[in-house]
Length: 456
Image 1: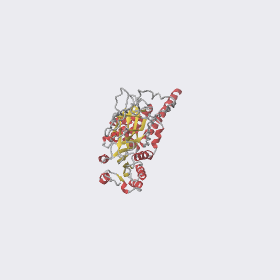
Image 2: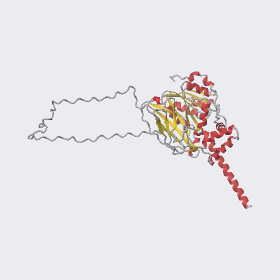
Image 3: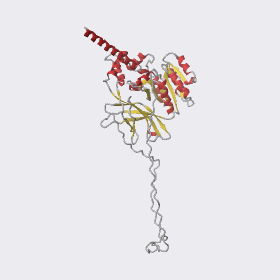
Image 4: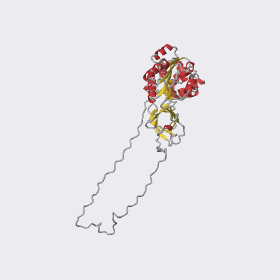
């Protein structure tokens, strides 16, 4: 009887521990969608200085010995020696001078290909970034960002986390919802690969130019700046970068960098409840629409963005979602016909303390990200598009005050039904600089707003 009682107590103890484990896992995952973007740190590698060759060592000039006047000069006693005055001077041999060809440019030397230690079961996910042209050096400066990971399904801790989320959002087996759920949570199960040396190449250049990324950290990410060979034509609209693999590994791993002119117009856009229906204010609905349901676009936003794209505007998507959702968000942007653009999401690692930064306010992520974009392109003007669900109005108003004359328009999608509150936040800006809208027709009907004059 005592033994049975002891076993029963032990089983209740294990059940309590598993319930607490699932609850803790659920809390961690539920917080993922509250994340905000982390400011990017640019790491520039400088080329080693070229050592100057030492000047040749100077040697003393020998001084001819003085002649005794009492002794005859041996040169004078030689009758066969020619008279230095009467002897004809040797004719100079003409040296051909190479004539440079007109408009000729030095051809860059081919680079040795650095080595990579990427294994065949490890993947590299490249994120769309931006490039800026330096007129002084005549070189494009590329921002390059990627993630090295290995698919993993054996982690008991992470599998328990996903199982808890599945129970919370109500996943039903053998349904399209279950298929979407597995696809959208897959990147939360991967192992981040640290200490990886990734090499990329811009094969469009002749010869090909290679870039060696800094070694990946615990989160598997690498981000750095690199420069192309001189010449503005080296980068046009989008530059393709290929990940160099080892012999026998024929996978095509690649990414793109958006090449932006110094002058022009860029659209900085939020994603959730701005172009994608997410219900950010209702966290359970947010999780269901993020991991379970088919993504739905905000009506009319794709038409608006395509119109701007035809006018030559460039795009940057700044979101509070973590990088683990990049594959499905990128697929949504393409499927719903939104223009491609650089992506700026939240950097987290579920297994370390970075998960605690998920509770940070959007200002701590979005504000420095947008500031970096404006500082990188000081002559470009910007349109800021967001929603009233979080802090977009506050962030955009702060940006407009900090950069007078740089912000053409601020568009806030009113999803909370409190238009007066949003208008109060923006009231210290010129009235023609911002619009709070419920339906995109309120923007599309104002055609002048889509073609801002140079005086703005």
